[in-house]
Image 1 (cartoon, rainbow, N blue to C red):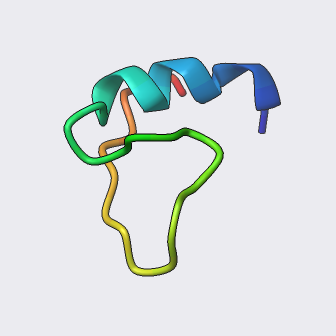
Image 2: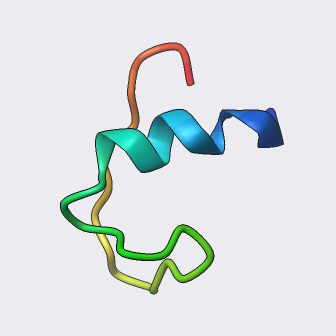
Length: 35
């Protein structure tokens, strides 16, 4: 994987993630195509 694609994942999940440094076990995130 590529660590520089985190921003695309964060932007797709802003309604679920307040701080991109704090992602918790069990959280369900949207992973955009091509990420």
